[in-house]
Length: 284
Image 1 (cartoon, rainbow, N blue to C red):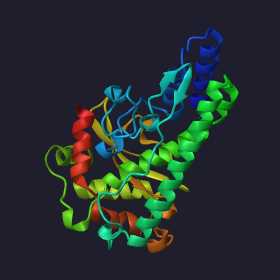
Image 2 (cartoon, rainbow, N blue to C red):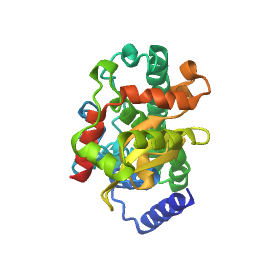
Image 3 (cartoon, helix red, strand yellow):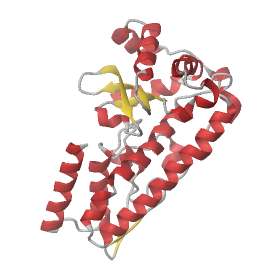
Image 4 (cartoon, one colour):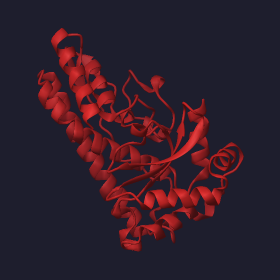
């Protein structure tokens, strides 16, 4: 957005002018926060945290469960003014590709995870290498020009990582309960009413994007929102609890162009335990 671009550029130009950035580590973390639209957050699973952060882990300043692509930017170790990037990696799924059938086919899951998600990881790493190189050369203009690719590919990685956790095999499905169910009922009236509103909102996304159930820290309430393309949920001001991918690659092989059918079926494999955990962390 223009707001992000303007503030991003002002930050870098002023920092460059006053020579206040002492190392590639500091400047790159500032770059990431502004480019990706949110605070540096934790990875969306302990299995991702291992290797996501360097020895100077930024996890201590994290927001658990956040989908901020700031989570993707590694801490940079500084040595002689240079930075070292610990690459992002494709997370393993906690279930087999066929485990979500019949709601989501094995063919879709394999293609979605091993091809589409992997592409975001690969492109994110390649882009961050370019940004690091530009920063090392003091080429602020080049670093700024790469911000869109960082947000798109980094967002794709974080959004999909949340999505995989938000799903579970049919045999493991349990409906929401406790604090999560109470919050849903308070905000939407009932679980059925929430699912109807969420599906309608997500179905209305023009082109590609995501449907989200998020937590508003300012109000202490749940909210439904959407993001375009691979924009992270944090850009809406909400902490993500549940994200549903409505890019065609998430459903087209099985549901063709009938997005509402996919959005109806996905409720059979939502991992409400994970959503509840994210809500608990968001409130902490």
